[in-house]
Image 1 (cartoon, rainbow, N blue to C red):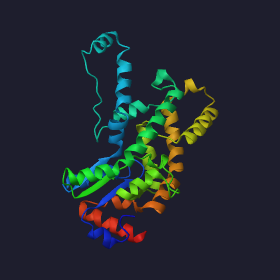
Image 2: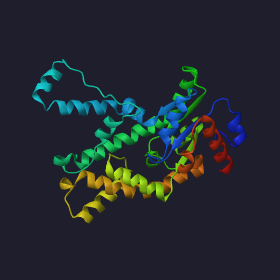
Image 3: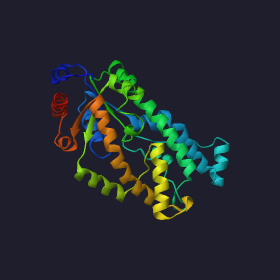
Length: 286
């Protein structure tokens, strides 16, 4: 690890951390709080995925949809209009919309083979974006003059790495650039995440072997053809399955590559000083 004791952490002139965990447990809250303090640079892996690595796919999909409208089709073909993705740290909807949900196209779904293709694109993009952490940690200090650096990883990082593999290239690159910090929830947090997701289901990334297994299981349980699957119903069902499967994968990352903090501890953090103290404690606990 970059910091092997609380003393090393406290004395480090340039602190670098990478937050890991399910969306909704506090990664973005901490990142935005630290950025607001003025001394921390915030690197969002999801934003990097949606701009640098998936941006062209996203915009091409917008254009594909626009070409179905005769009025827009002629304007596009004559270069009279410009279509772009307005993705931001706070609004990742263009990326989510592109990933989509498999199932009945009349209900907003996309064919399963298209879904698989986009999932594969996302995997490559996420691995590349995580490996860019060192690049942006350097830019944060050398170009912008930020003393400290925080990487807000995607909730799906555990799906694109193997925390038990000491030679995992993505985790090696990440751990050399920043201290991986897992934000770990409890049963209550899991219920809260499920309820929040149930109210507003959104596209998710799955490991391909897990996705194929769960897709086949869902079709059997619902006794439905792939083309007739309710996209939101599958996504809601799949989210619960995904939460359980991700937990040991997150823990392997924390055990072998970094430290862990509890989601309940995150809620008590109000400023960078609180954050620094919590990370120091987590390092000593590990």
